[in-house]
Length: 404
Image 1 (cartoon, rainbow, N blue to C red):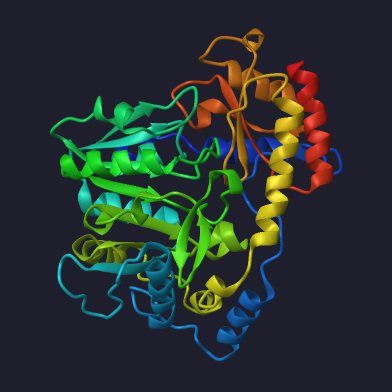
Image 2: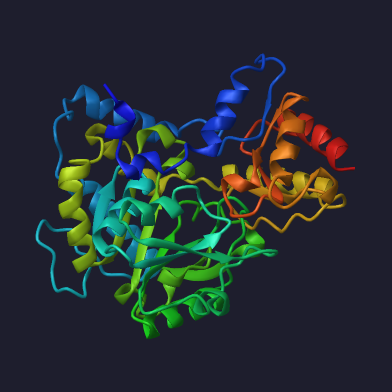
């Protein structure tokens, strides 16, 4: 059988994840020698209340199909958080209210929310503006919808600004993706940058998708103050916090990174009910629902204090800057747990510099991710400091030697 002739173009024309390639190469390094700074996964334990709630749900038999939208208890918890955090009044009923009223959809991870959003909004030939560098899924979101990904270069500071985006807009532009705090650079947009992007998208009748998977992992210098009840709470700037944002901002957040439950595959989307309804309709066929007992596990997640873990990541971030910033360019990571570090010119041209640096690291048992995994360029590498401090220090010793 000629299998190659049968494979669909949508699959044949994409590459495997560059991050997964790093994992495969790393499998050949003895565990006691491997210094893995590649994986973007929290290294702290899942908080006990979340684990206990999930186990209890399994033991109580909550293992069948839930509602496609998500269990009411979780959607109500999300609605309460977004009411205090953003000032949004959300519909969590089975039948949403007026078209202007935001809704909530629980999804199997934030990647599912992104895919559903693009499938609901993009027609063949439409354009999706994504920041470069980008989360590896972003270009393929357009590809799967037979749309076009338009790359907005954010070098050298990795800030997606209205000025940069507006130059790329055409009548076919349907959506702009903002990822702040971002992957791979950890950069956090300012409140002014968020406001300008929102104003631009509203004027051009374009959806602004705010991917905030790292919303809780913003460090103090990047945060602003918002009122929660009668007291101020430090938060990461977001276009969703601005007045009237709910009419054109599609918010995507999740539980995996914040609470170390990446394998549970739980995220959520909120925004204009008309869009949420279309995404829900598609989810019925794409995924059916999110994992039922695990939804019960995160119902109380918003009550768990993660400040200690965020402070620990800030300590590691500061160590990365202390060791590497004197040797090369390291734009300030204001959140998440990544740094996107410039590779010296001596490692090659812009088309393979990051790859050459990565291969040099492999010979020293060090795993990082070359920049071309996240970009049309290959001048940087990403390191993750979501790893025990002892391993991070070993990795920084190797990187300092390679950069010096």
